[in-house]
Image (cartoon, rainbow, N blue to C red; front, side, top):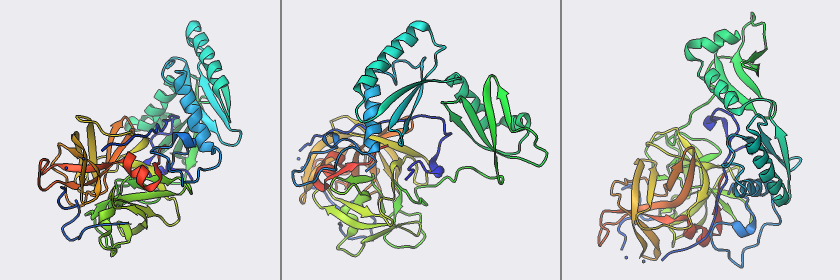
Length: 432
């Protein structure tokens, strides 16, 4: 299953991130109403194929460990090995990209041998260390025939196609996408071609450019919003308990999760959204998203099983209540700390940045809960991702619960940490 579905694709030049998962827990003051729409009463109820010992959250002895490492786990292990030897960040003047081949179980490292000789020598030495660390996969070094900065720069320029200048140069109609191949140094341009088009291949600034004809004009990417999402479902999508068409969220989808014992992927939201059992099924703009499958009242979280199963993506909507912007989840926080900056991305309230002002609160058997300085969370945000972002990536911190109505933190919004959700339901955050 390709979780980088076309509606969310960036220009397809090679880039990647790793999910970093660790474990820890925290621990304690009465929450008022759960944060749900006024119409609702109170509530109920994995891309990270990391090695078992690296699972996020404490391990439960009764849980059966998945056998061996999957290809995805090998890839993550390979990328971690690269990070540890500084290939990714230490040699940006030499390092030109990477790609994991699932068939051969090989991690290809591309490098530009036109770099300064001393830097190239250092890089190759670091790469030999990474190769020695490789377990369960082969690390293969390959020289690239084109400067990667130039390759990506030309791809960006062609994809922008300012005032149709590149359409004219290439003799094509509308340009819908540009794809980089670091192995060959080739750009493939998806474009509408007419009967008079004569040339299907060009050399521009020493870079091979190949035209790939597409059938008709129109956007190459179908942007989708949190109000109208589709499989595989993203975190932060608006949820309704019925199939009526409405952009108003009753609750909000949380992060995607993977169950330890079966490897199945789930969507999630706040457990209190389930009410007294009258709302088992959840929809996004009239389309069925999933049904309650696992739940925990203590961490106010329920897992939603999709149909077909595991139709969720390791990404979340980040932005306003009708945003089309998603960020890839690449890691999870081991626990909150006072003054830590986080953000709520809610189905109704949109994106709000705040900071942690209290940890370890409990009420009515729910907790530990984390309190923020924010007071602007609104009805329908229950279950929303609490996160931080870096570029196109996001780190998971928690899932929104509601707002204190009385006591020391009256008026402040609060959430459940992902580390406690993980421990309670024997699941791990799904990461890229």
